[in-house]
Length: 431
Ligand SMILES: [Zn+2]
Image (cartoon, rainbow, N blue to C red; front, side, top):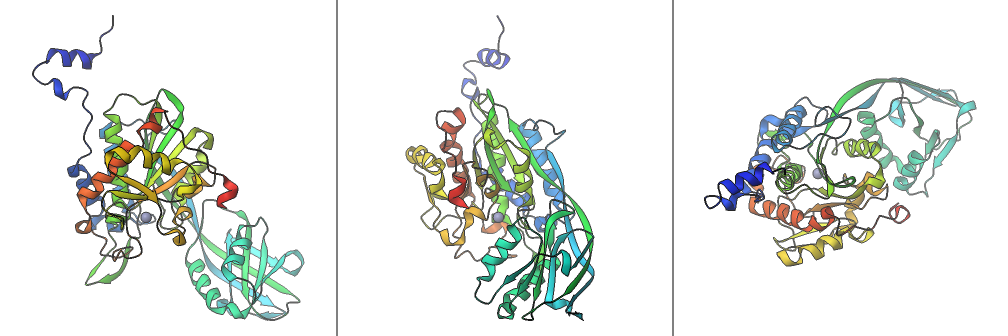
């Protein structure tokens, strides 16, 4: 007969400290507070994904995972899942229309290649006309699988310049030399000929998601808890403070996944496998979650719960949290029903117009059909600290945050045990 050492030890000290045996670790205010305070400290410099200080947070989270005793994901030597993103800055550019050189403020390119040459013969010409909805047409043209030269009506000057100033600074991608690419030109001229010559300075940035797991009896049925750990970095100063600390956005969510990991690790091995993932680069375009979603088999992910800003009580009250895209799978309802007896309510996202369901790190997974939703508590419409230097540790309601993490732990138990399985998202419905 083989004895379980832990059980044996428990029996040996029976009577003295039996109550400590097999008792799950509490999700404690002390730990929640410590994690948020550390990640939002000024020396973290606002955790901008492309700045060197991001590694301080990455190392801190890795260390927590190590101390908790999480396993690494298969194929990874440690908790860091490294990948590269590329940014392209225009250096030498020239665009001629009907033989005339255009001022550079009337065009911009979206290309991830050192050099892009185009002339009339090999281009596919499209339009954003004065009647078109600029945003919708822009999105459709950049999402289609064709490279095009897009002539934009001067009626859209204002939006064109806004988009141009954004993309000239931050044209980024997970892939280099990828096609299609598009060039946008603001003109009302009828175009008989053109010549486009754009040269880009390409920089690569090494980024890391931080991921750990508890392997379950069912290895390939995975419940994933995630939260982004990056923030927006250093911004224009207010009263000499220029660090956007990101305590609520999203050190609070990271504290959530770390404490969920600590809690579930203290229980008996789960039936389903549990992943804990801190995504990078959410704030600059969701690159961490997009990369991670490319590495997994979507069929293996049973549910994804993404914690996003859980540091302040929701408008509906302190014991509530909202779930984005509630109606697209049964995950929200499972959480709601499971939390009924713990006096906590999960309810649908009260800000559907903000389209948070497709704006957060759950989105690339939802687009694969995974029941992937974000859970938040912040009254985002009236929050004074959102993306400001004032998103500091002292604005966080620690008991509320701790309580929310406990509710997520309790409400997700039936999914982890395999008793409940949320329905998949219908991709047609969300796109
Ligand atoms: Zn966020």
